[in-house]
Length: 200
Image (cartoon, rainbow, N blue to C red; front, side):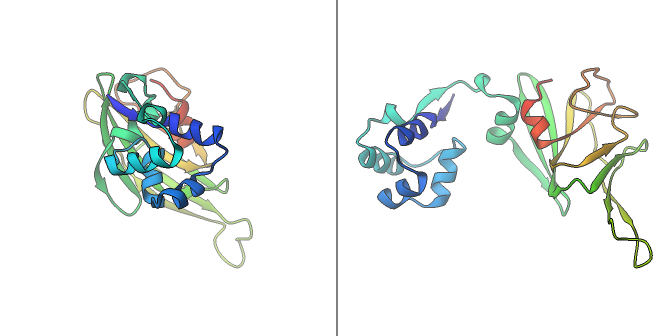
């Protein structure tokens, strides 16, 4: 079971109140509001302050829900455990509906002028395009980002935020979020937006 604060946000809308106004009225920090937004644990004192401010009962601002009602992405956000962190990415592991997942979440936001290459050797590269390159300098720079490791009986997802262009997905060991042809050697590569809609 986990605590869901969706009722709190609905109550704020009903009372025509913003999160900023709630912070001013209760003295709560932006950090606490962020924790509530992600359905994370807060103190009883925090809940009492909110109830007093809104003239509400505890059941008006929160409810208990079962983890199985969470989407894969929300489960990753709430229960994923960071096991490694480096310059380019962080590694998050969790189990969802009996399946082990390892997420390689890339740190940089990728733009449309960046191509993500999924190489046959198992390495993922970033190629940054420079439209005014050429005479004054290189027109593109290619950098190795990661060579994800896949253990037996787990699903690996390499996650990018932003809007990159992908090359080489569905051609080797990497597959896209739209490709449901699961292979033992496959590693999914997708944007964060696609991951929010992805269910394996």
